[in-house]
Length: 108
Length: 403
Image 1: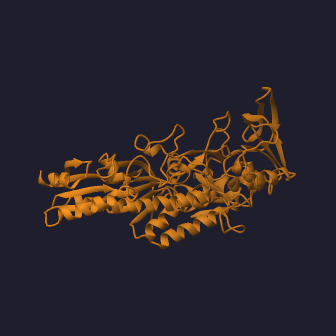
Image 2: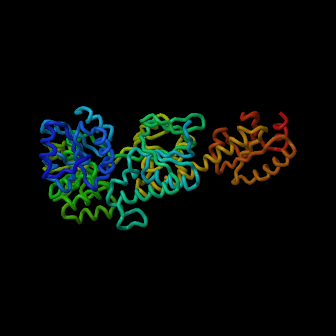
């Protein structure tokens, strides 16, 4: 499952949770084509690593300040959180599911 | 056993999709191999699309390419999601090898992988990618609402995307390498940019370095005339400095220029028989959706003709039980009509088949047998040339049959 995040639940569902389990956040927007292409693959990865990593997604058009606060200023971006902090970030419109999975494996 | 395709198209942008439509509509077994989940190529990342004929307003890049995809699939084009790493020739077979180890076999291949944004390699460009450096305005414009951005480049893409960004941002500064007032973009687009109060220009300049802490905070702009470097504060930098062709996977096989673009004939043929190229990947004058689609249509049609000619020649000459006499003629050489009449009479009642190759339409087979003079007559037995004459008289013909 990929939880829809926003400024109300981000602290609890990402930063707090990451103290007990790694969290990946998919930063996206409805207009970003590469993001839309990756989304089904992110859902598939969430299924595959269910119980080992928590997955969330954040629509930056609704949560721009939150995204910028997380140093995300380009899409698509995947951020990884551990122990209450961001520990890794992948960006670029040529980002592939394979690269995302390689990064996931560093934390699970 | 791998199934064999008539036509394999590498790349699902407008060129590949148009080739798919033409290929599958002419009943060829056709597949498009596309790396991304959704076909569309670069066109799918451009929101503004106002020069594709028939769509003055109201279509976008993603919408148009989605319709092209549906169109190709409706005629029977198969879409395979995979990344092609190599193309090989094996006899008359053309083979595509994918990153996940699949081998796809085709009679013909169209290379339509297009181009991707050029990366300049400026200091800070890689470091700040996704944190202020962007190559996709529709992806990232939202982040810069009411902020200041820099656009690097001055072609159609750069200026169009700068105009798009003004819908979101406070100010766009375009860094132009040319003299004041000179840009590579089309006049109508330039005029629109000059009239836009949110767009500012810095002329005779390039970006020397991107600076920031966690996020981009500015750029160092270098005036190429004076060498002077000045600081410009901004929150984002968008690069639209042209594209580079994605031709690595055919390097060493298909001829290309110093930049990696593939030269073709006007039938989209590369130097390798059975391999065609279409779209932005070609050496060409104008790289647009409409010219890519046109290339695709031509390439698929040429591929179909190629298969028909190759298979015809194989059945009638190379694999035939009987010896064959092959006359290379041309409708532009009037005397060859008489030659053909004479040949038809000469072979009558003999155990030999007469095959006519129109060199005006088909240069490929003529070139393979180094036909320099029209007419030229060859005699084949079991697929091998056993006799040849460039003086196609009745006497020489009868001698050729006898030997």
